[in-house]
Structure formats: structure tokens, C-alpha cells
Length: 442
Image (cartoon, rainbow, N blue to C red; front, side):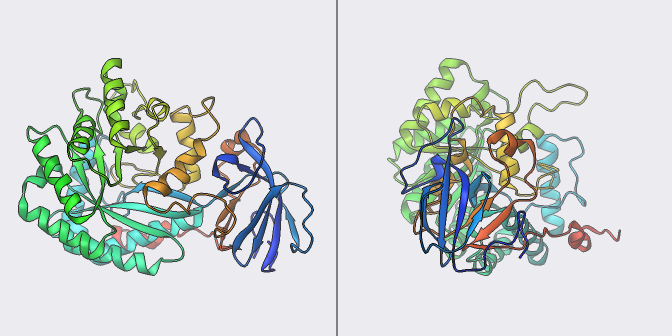
């Protein structure tokens, strides 16, 4: 197959030589890194797995034909910890009229009630999976709107697609509903039952500063402990400094001595706290063992949007401060072509590129590639993903960029994606394939 370079050797045993890879994503090798944190390596591939990781130029007799990457950056296939496949690609039929969070929420709810049949959800979710796979995603967690009739529609579709895509993308699901519904016993039973039947042991919801926030979180945590669930929350997606449900989640985790994994998404209002409040909350998050995922593209789109006024902040959480405190941090895609974000294509290289600019990840360490690879893989329970290591699958992204400035200067549209050591067809699905769901004829 022709790739972004040329034909990868067809042999079952071959070498990728003169590659650069982030040292933070390499295991099982003694290597030195340059000032960008990149190590110059030769990768031995045998029967679809990484057989060896050696300093570039190491003599390796009988290691098969070599393919010179000419210093190009090689990444493991990446891991997307926070997406919304079930909302994806509805923009043509249900736009956000003003670009605000409430405009997004109201129009998604309306579209869900009017259009989200099993066929509709399945078609759009699979379209998203095809995009993610072509771009080089190895695993992703999608949030599933879990209210009313949708509970019985979307979760069986998720289970079907998880099985269909096994071996290509690891697909996880987490429920999404407002925290106030945790006070509704019937709703909690319905969501718990469907997660047990079709899910991956993950439970979650959107937290708001409702008067009963403590009691509602106690119900969620007790439910997770009873059923052995990990937890995943949408948290404080606002620039209101009074929104501090992240602190309530940390308090609940400590109160219940919760031993499972907890992922908190967005956490936007943390960045607009007074310094002493920010420090207190971050300390609790660290003590509670909570990981945080920032969604830079979506939150810069939504946050601080007011008609006729230039936004004053970037919408993202205090990611540098969280990382400095030892909190596992990551970035992810979030929404794709729906009222919450009009753009996107589930391309984690785009997320890393734009996240670097929005969050100013450059000039602050050389290990930020972890944020779309090793760290989300660990929080998702798939520690073997998102790294390059001997014995692991040769699931790799090959690029022509020789350093981070070349890597971020262009979208790397000519990248090559290897799955089990073999290049995949990177042709992206045409948006026209969804026209029949959008009421479009041209």
C-alpha cells in the first residue's frame, strides 16, 4: 500500500530506522533525548509487534529490510478519553443559533427528542469511529446521553459497535445526565442496569451547583462502590467562579474513600478562582486521586462567548497547575460538528496541536504528548495503549516532521498509520454519506 512516505516493507519482519519518538512514550529502552524530548531510534517490527527499540544506527543483523524515516516523528496510536459520538455530525440539521453553551444544550436536546433513532445514532457514531481510526486513534471513551427513551436506544448501539470495531478501536461508554437525576431512584436504576448490561464499568453525570449537590454525589459514589464502577464527570463547564462542583466531587471521593478511577472533564471555572481557592481545590483533587481532562477546542469555542464582544479568556482549566501538583492531566476531542462544537474530526493530532497553542503547552516541559496517549490510556484501564514498547502491538503513527515545530506547523495530513505493523487505508468518510439523515439532497 502506498503511504505518506512510500511502500512500507511487506515482510513480517522489518525495521523503521532513523525515527524520532517522544521519550516519554517509550518503554523498555535505554535512550537519550534531544532538547525537544525526542529520541532518535530504530524500531524493529516482527509479526505485528514491536520487537526492539534501539538507538538509531545500531547494527541488527537478520532484522529484515529497513525503512528509513529520515528523522520523522513516530507516535503510538493515540487515546481519546472524552468524546460524544452520539451527538456527532448533527450540525447540518440542528445548529447552535448563537454559539453559547445554552444554545448548544437546548438544540441538542431538541434534536435528540426528534431524531435519535437507533439507525440515526448508529450511522453517526460509526462515521465518527471511521474518522478517528483513519487519523490514528487506538481507543476512545464516548459519553452517551442517558435520559428517558434514549437509554434504551443508544446503549445497545454502543455495545454493537464496540464488538464490530474490536481490534481496530477500543470503545468505551460512560453515561451522561444531569446530577439532579441522581435523586431520582427510578432513573438511577435504569442507567445502572444499562451500564451493567452494555457498558464498560464506568458511570458518570454532569455536575451543577444544585442545593442537593452533596446528597446527589453521595448517591452516585455509593452506586459506583456497590457495582464496582469507575466514575467520569462533566464538571463546571462555565466561567462562573461560584461553580465549584469539582471540590464537591473531591470531598465526596475522600468521604467515601473511593478506590476506583475518577475522571473530571472540563473544570473550566477552576481557572477563574482566586489563587487561594484554586490551590485548595487542586490539593483536594490530588488527594482524592482525580484525573482531569481538558477539552481545549470545544471550550475555547463555547466559553466567554457574548454577542458583539471579544472573548477575554481561552475557556480551559488550570492544566499546568494541576500537572504541577501531580494530578494526571490529559486533553481530548470532545464534540464534533454538533451544537457544542461546530468543527472537529476526532483527530488527536489536531487536538494536540491546537491544545499546545491554546494551553501554551510549549516551553513547559517535553512530556505533553502523554496527554493524548499514555495518561488517557491509564485512566481508561488500557495501560498498554499509547506507548511504544517491546512486545506491544506495532500500532504507530509515522510522520515526516522532524521536530515539534515542524509537527505543529502542519496538520500532518500525509501521516501513515500502522495497525499491527501494517498500514491502514486512511481515506476519510465523506460528509455526504450523512446527507440522508440531515434532510440534504445536495
